Structure formats: structure tokens, C-alpha cells
Amino acid sequence: MASGTALIYDDEMTSYKLLWDDPECDIEVPERLLSSYEQLKHYHLVERCIHVPVREGTEEEIMLVHSSEYLEVVKSTQTMNEEELQRVSENYDAVYFHPNTYRCAKLAVGATLQLVDSVMSGKVRNGMALVRPPGHHSQRNAANGFCVFNNVAIAAQYAKRRYGLQRILIVDWDVHHGQGIQYVFEEDPSVLYYSWHRYEHQQFWPLLRESDYDAVGQGKGKGFNLNVPWNKVGMGNSDYLAAFFHVLLPVAFEFVPELILVSSGYDSGIGDPEGQMNATPECFAHLTHFLMQLANGRLCAVLEGGYHLKSLSESVCMTVKTLLRDPLPQISGEMAPCLSAIESIQNVRGAHKPYWKCLMYEGNCSSDAERNNFFCAVLGFILPVAYSYQPDLVIIVIGPNRSLGVNGISLLTCLLQGLAESQILVVIQVRSEIKLVQSVAKALSGVSTPDFGAYAPASQENVLEIKRLRDQLQQEWKMLRCSGNTHIEN
Ligand code: Q9C
Ligand code: ZN
Image (cartoon, rainbow, N blue to C red; front, top):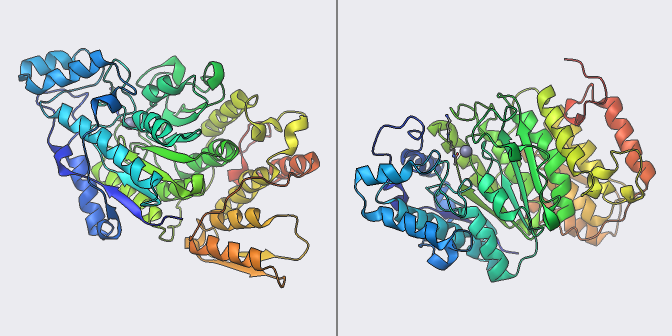
């Protein structure tokens, strides 16, 4: 298995900026990249990464997502004067052009594809690309929300073509809805798109009906678009983790992606003027860590938004540090998702119940409830309780009469390493289980992430027992909450 983390950055992508007064756009500044890279240097993370050079994305690559007409429009801005630039910009929502925008947008695409190539060729295990302009709002025929070319959507199309991938997971943790990505893959079951976003019942930009939880995808793509709309500001670490435990992770483990692309915006972090959310930089370490357990660790994080320079750069560092497999920092604050978050989570789970076996058991009955019981127990119970408790030490004891297979134990070991600053002890009480010992040792050292092809299904009885336990204990262990069915105090 490949090791090493790629870092892709080129200061040429700081060579464009807003040239006139526009309060809508003045937060998207070159310093976003400069301060992120400075902070990475400060923590000596740059020297620990494998530097991969950027390149321009080709016209053919850009046209995997965009029309040639739109490409020509963007190209034409290279030679425009300020007045002309302003006029083109006005054709789009929350966009500005500069003579260098086209060049930087091509570099942003190329940087993203370089990252995909590095990971897919096995040169590195994972990596991050620091790019400007961002991409997730841009569409076939339109720039939108500071975005010109849809870097991550192009990367997914490219990875499908070039490497024949059949399942790609896009995780968009930017605080805005990446509607551009949703539009590209709405009918495509080979790309699972997950986004959480400030929504406030459609009162927040981009003010779209289709950002709500009931936009689940269309045609063959039904079930492969997951929107978690936040209807209040102030969402924090526990709300984000709850959305991972109860929505994204169960579905992602069932989907079994071959590659993960992260639309890695940090305007969902504390202090950001756009997001108004509360998640601390440490939270992004944990989100990254969970995703690293999927797709054999093949993860490409690509910068999107993030406008509070300090919060942005600290969160970028947390992401890269985690990709490098450093121990994770403790997560701060009381671990209890708020009512509004629980309501959103319950709504997405309900909307996706028909498409995902891991969500089906929530209904009264289902003969399919038997699958994915391992994930039901780990994601729906063990992790939420563990994160509610915030231990200083984790001890895993493996006895002789276990029902869990080697893969399951290894995955559990990997997932629990996010706790207690990765101080974890595994006690194996059985002799001569060389395979188990080897697999757990690999999990602990991060040499490989366990491969979870097939699991021995447990009984429906077990699933219902977990649900019962969750209902019974969620008063005390608040991270267990994922529905408003049971009464909730506080
Ligand atoms: N007053 C990204 O984060 N803001 N784009 C509209 C309404 C547009 C955000 C402001 C925000 C675009 C990549
Ligand atoms: Zn954003």
C-alpha cells in the first residue's frame, strides 16, 4: 500500500484579485492561499509532504464538465480591461474576473488532477491541493460563487475515464451547497455526493430549493445525492460528528468508494464570516480521519472556501497533519448535537431510507435489516458513545468467544484511534491467532487500512437491540441522538 501525503501548491494561484468595490466578493483574497501555506510551513508540515507540481488543466479536461461556449467566455477575459471584466462578472452570481483568472482557474483544475494522478498511481496514499479559484459552485455554462471551473467535478469525471473507477465519493464540507457538483452527478450512481450547508430554510445563499434534504438524486442516481441542510447557524463539532456518524459514514461504508474527493472548504469552521458556524480546527482532523478509513485511504482534499484567515489556515494544517497520520487532537466542547441538527439528520435519513440498507432498519421492519449490522453497531452506537465520553485512553479487549471477524476488529481499532489522542491499547486474550494480531498491528501502525469487503451479517434482533439501547441511553450519551422520536431534554 502506498504511503506518503502529497501537497500541491503554487503561488501563481495568488496572482488574481478583486479589482473594484464589491462587498459580495471581497472576502475571496489571495491571502487565503498564502496564509494557509505559511501556517503549513510554520508547523513543519510542508517538509513532511511530497511536493507535486501543478500544471494547467487542458481544454479537453475542462470540457468534461463545462461547455466550449463557456470555456471561450472565460478565455476571453484574459485580455479584457477593468470595465469589460466587470461587465462579464455581472453576468454571474457572486463572481469577479481578473486578467489572471483564466490562467489560475486552469492551474486549479490541473493541480486537482495532479493530485488524483498521484493517488491513483500509488505515488502517494493521499494528499491536499491548495487552489484558487474554488470550484464547487461553477456549472456547465456558468461561473458562480467565486468559482470558475468545477475542479472536483472535473476530477471525478477524469478519474472515471482515466482509471475506470465505478464508485467515487465526494464529501463537500464547505459551508455552502456545492450545487454545481450536484447538477453534474444528479443522475449518476457512480458518484455519491454528500454536502452539508448553511440553509436556514432556503434563506441563505444560493437560496435554492434543491439544496434541501429531499433532493436525493434523479433517475438512476436516486439515493446518490445526500444534502444535510443546516437550518440554524452556530453548528459545531458535535453537530458535524453526528452528521458523519448517522448519515455520511453508514452510507459511505455501504457504498464502498474506490476514491474519495473532498471539497474541502473551511468556511464551515469557527470564525468564518460566511458560515457563522462553530466547528474548531480539530474537528476537521476527525472528519479527515474517518474518511481515511474508506477507499483504501485514497483521499484527495481540494480547497474550496474559507474566509477567516486564521481559522482557515489552522484547519488546513489539521487536515494535512491527519493525512500524515499524526495522532489526533482531542475534540473540545460538550458533545451534544443541537435539536435543529438532529432534525436535519433525521430528515435526510428518512429521505434516503429507500436507497440504503443501513438506514432501512429505522423503519418498523425490513427483511434487509440484517445487512450492515456491524456498521450499525459501530457507527450507530460505539463511536457516538465513545465521542460523548471523550476518554483519555482507549483499551480494546478481544476475548476468545467473539462474533466479530478480523476485518471488523481492525476497522474498529482504526476508527477508535481518533479518540484519546490516539493512545490506544489492544489486548488480545487468545493465543495462536496470528492473522488477527497481524491485522490489528497493521491497523495500529497505519501500514494499511483494513479491507472490508464482506461482513458476516448479524440478526435483525441485534439491529433492533442496538436501536433500543440507543433510545435508552441517548439521554446520557447525547451523540447517540439521530431522531427526535424519543423525548429530548435540554
Ligand atoms: N450576501 C465558496 O465558498 N456569497 N463560495 C454571497 C450573500 C457568495 C462562496 C453573499 C459566497 C460564495 C467557494
Ligand atoms: Zn463556501
